[in-house]
Length: 186
Image (cartoon, rainbow, N blue to C red; front, side, top):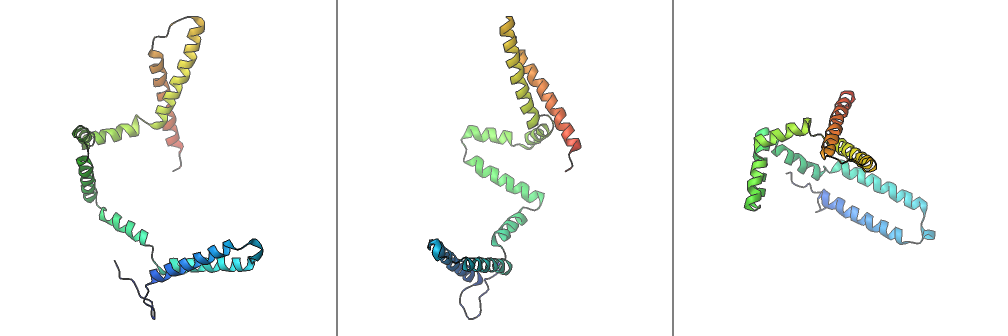
């Protein structure tokens, strides 16, 4: 990290100086807002607003954004795949140490590399959110319609209707997802 630059003839750093100026500007604006509308001068307000904008733009140019520096530094720490993997393993270990023994065992099983890979493959191919939603919607509507029909006509439902309607809706959802993927211009 670089040392703060001191403004000549002043013991404040640029950051402190700008913070002081911003604080003074905020106090001035608050005093202006407390005045009755009849005492406010629109030209003064416009001028104050333009001065505040100029100061903010000057501050943006003079001072680098400290938040961006921190984020970039954090990103640089985990740039390589091995570093990311090590950071992930350390995080998982620290979290798992705080869990009760049963949850810790389950977490280790679920987060093992083979299980995670299988989950990613299944999640990106078969278990798509839109297909699950369409399957559930289709099952609800089909069972509702069949139940009303069965009640009116006097026959019993077997129980497979929900599962069958869900499978049909799920398949339609997969087809719709596939077609959307083909025609998407991303």
